[in-house]
Amino acid sequence: MLAAYPLVFYPETLREQIEESDPMWVVVDRLTDKLEYAERDAVRARLLSLRAVAGRLLGDLGPAEADGRQALEHARKAGDIRLVATARARLAQVLQWKGEVAEADRLYAEAASPEVPARLRAEVHELAGRSAFEQRRYLEAVNHFETALDLRKGADPEMVERIELALDEITRHTSGGWGPYPRTREEIMGEAAAPRPLRDESSGLFGYVGAVSPRFAQAQPFADGVAWVRRPEAPAWELIDESGRVLIDASAGYLAAERFAEGLAWVSREQRGGWVAIDRHNRVIVPVGFDDAKPFHRGLALVQRGGWGAIDPQGRVVVQPRYRGFATALVHGGLIDGFTEEGLAVVDAGDRYGVIDRSGQLIVAPVHAAVRIHPTAFLIADKYGLWGALDRDGEPMVELKFKDRADVLDEIDRLSPEPRPVL
Image (tube, rainbow, N blue to C red):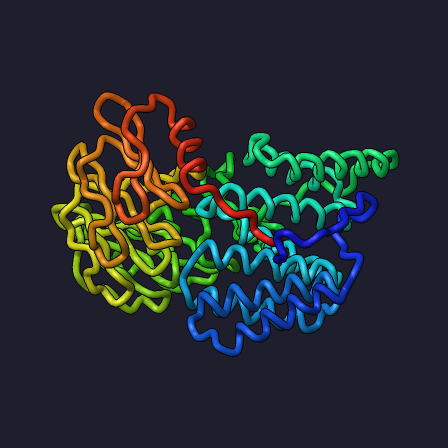
């Protein structure tokens, strides 16, 4: 009903409005009736976030915000990244209409994950562009609109029309300038830039710009608010905070140290191997020495003992170390060091690739020459370079016959078209 509801788009504000409120209150009542019997988190998330959309269009922004926040909590519990992204975008639009643009922009930035379907990402970028427009960040708005168009590649005429009207409106406002320079994602998320290591030319020693004077023979970038450094007279690494205060000194004897992530870091007192995980108080959390290890990411760390597997922060093995490596790649977003937000990883079983989940269970057998993770499918290739696709259950979806991956993506869209997110 909401998808078909007649909305009027006003180029002057870049907002969609309703002309009659009574039918929309009917939508609210029907959603409320359904919520009374909804028990599963996924269902409650969907219904609450739709009611937030209806409330926003009615101008009932307080209850719409409450619905949006509850929807996001239920979506997180459900563990569906598409549902989480949609709930974030719907809540963000309510907050944007309330004038709370800082939080709205953070939610838009989180919702525009490369792991969600392109159509959803495109609409999120369009809405983020509208938010930037309202803040007179015209160049930033244009960047978002261009990203939305690139993601849809002309496949959404209504979006193209809206964005063309928006660009015309921006042109009318930019005679006095394009506004502030576009923000980075880190700036939007409110993440302060960490001091960066810099070598002093006269002494040859490293320090951190604006924070710690040059005194180190080696200096790693800050991560999780701390950094590993090594003094000229010491063979071992020590850990400092952003003020230069030593948290773990060189007497700990760590000849090798990796950056902190999710409160833990891998260290070793050996020249090769012997990796254990410690916290910032130098307490050993994972005592087993591994041949190699990667920083923790989304609650798991890749470890090597013969082959590669994965452990949780308590050191429990969740994926047996039987693979030659991990090679998780998204169709639209590059490489991921480990598991996606959805809990999937591409594994290398020796020149053949497959997909596992966070428990180590095989979703796609490692028999393919290449695998890429699509938001709703898996792209696969054979040894001849031909591409096809499997569905999320690992069953055949698109025949292995396409030389260009873009043709496979088009075929996936044809077979399972994404519904328009009602944002």
